Length: 272
Length: 290
Image (tube, rainbow over all chains, first blue to last red; front, side, top):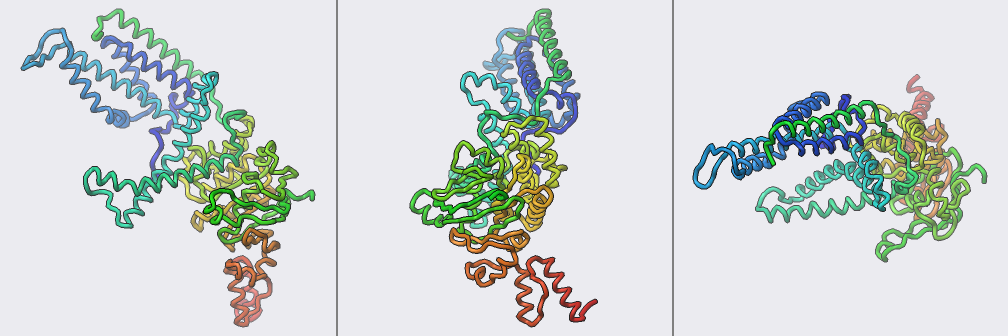
């Protein structure tokens, strides 16, 4: 059961999005987020929604998965909606009771904000759906490598991320084993109030930490045995190359930026 | 000696640490003189605390002896500037398969060693594929390590070492934490690499059956080398082996018991297959079967 867990939320595939250079993909995603925040009316936002939908289809990500990625932000969506409906001033009054007024402008703003957040989440989920965690950390290392000039240990950071990803399933397995061992000794992990349950976690966390430290120690040995000596003089098996797809993707993003600026000027803004 | 790859010359090692740790860990290694020849398959036996793991760690400069000298291909392990040259020659596979895999994808992990050595990307690719094929894990190259069995993980770890083009692999009880099937896989892989690729193997274990398959067996006790020779010779010293609390391989044990009951087997029996042959031969002679 535990063997089936996948780190991150990568969906294997062979689409153009999967094949893109992860560095370009990260940068394009950032640009996409900025463009979304530049949208000022439904025309430009609609264009972005269309683009996100197209990309989702292109990547072959099922709608179900996209909706799943929205679940954690549901609360934020509802909250944003309510706040915007009740606290936007101006516009035509539609409803008025007690101290609350609802205006058409408020509803527009609420819908606009919700669509914007959904678009944002969907767009960035596409990045993690089409890129393996290893590729992501690799790409981040390479994008940030100019920071070496400021004596920031980019390689060390990336290595830490990779190792963390590597050991998540191992440690989950370990937690399960320790929990079972403590249950077998009569530990009660499920009943009682918050404080009692928190206290019951101590006999799980302590062995977990001890074993994690031992693992770290052994891993360091193993890495040294394989001649690891930091990022200096290291080569990489998987080279990253900017291909035609990446250039097209960058061009499309640039075009999108242009279109959004044009639509913002041409049509009346909803917000701001 | 020209044909030796690792040379222990009167080596002693004591762990430092708190008094309690010292009491617990002593004795480590005492005045060991040993020479491992190129292409040999040596297994090192000993019960817990006999110093066999310490011996392994002395082989590739993880530990430096306090007295005496360890030389790898003529390089002194005490010379800090040679540390990575030594580790390029002598690789190590550890007990816990989980704690030696670095990457989240099998092929990336195998590439880790050559990447550290600064090998050209294309050459790394070639070596990774070659190494994974050599340990029979090529079909699993895109798997995540946590989805593999213990034996498979150990084979990935072995591939990670041979991708560095090491001349010698030290196995530090690689089979202690895995199931019998995985144990057989690891042993087979080690034997195959020794036979086909000419890699020197030092196989530390406490399974007598595994030790019996080596060219040479070294028995450690209390930090010293107690016995050193062919499996037949070492396991011939039944009394000494039993005295230090080790068992002789069960096939040899069976042969002994048969002997006690008046059934004489012709040849020395150490491995199960030896045993089958010998028993069959004896049965044929006795006219029990054809």
